[in-house]
Amino acid sequence: DQQVKQNSPSLSVQEGRISILNCDYTNSMFDYFLWYKKYPAEGPTFLISISSIKDKNEDGRFTVFLNKSAKHLSLHIVPSQPGDSAVYFCAALEGYGGSQGNLIFGKGTKLSVKP
Amino acid sequence: DTGVSQDPRHKITKRGQNVTFRCDPISEHNRLYWYRQTLGQGPEFLTYFQNEAQLEKSRLLSDRFSAERPKGSFSTLEIQRTEQGDSAMYLCASSRTEDPGDYGYTFGSGTRLTVV
Image 1 (cartoon, rainbow over the protein chains, first blue to last red):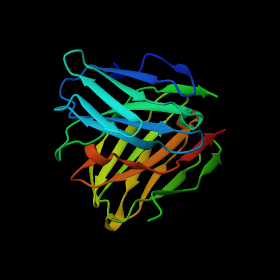
Image 2: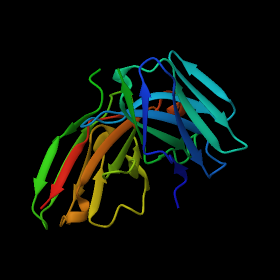
Image 3: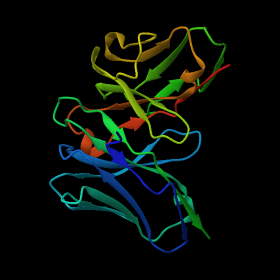
Image 4: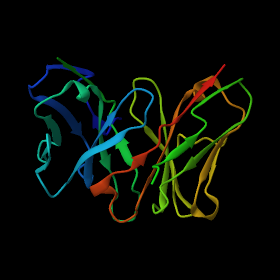
């Protein structure tokens, strides 16, 4: 059973508008949540993370929101740019603090930003 | 710092052959991870090392797979008697132990394996 779910395989947004990518999880023991961006033929690139003790983290155009009661997080990109077009993966970190430490990924959402 | 390097970038092999991939992590990172990604899926965890010690293996890592990290530097992932189902992108990542949540893992560009 998938512990991290990205239910939208794709999203199309106009340049300059907001992109909102969603992620749901099932395991309340996750310590950190991370977003990665992936271009074709490249490895995933880390974008932004949020600790389970926070509800918001911001870095430039990227903001991640965490709703622990709903086991839901979202990545907001404002304003969206054509260079943001990529596959975005939500990931959860299990056992932070020296125990397991492996990332559990969702299936990804392909974002297309149209000029 | 050149990031995480993986070699080769592409590998085509016949079913039943053995293949070996190499990963060179960021030098100050003591944790190294192997992931596998198939089409339409997110990366799936295979195994990880802290320094030279292999601390965890996924159930995806059958006995045909073996990974090593001698001296806690580069790592190799070997697949013996390859099967068509092994065709995937094999990703290596590294991180510092202390703050993987804050800074994430740094991934390499991957090795794409095609078994024919």
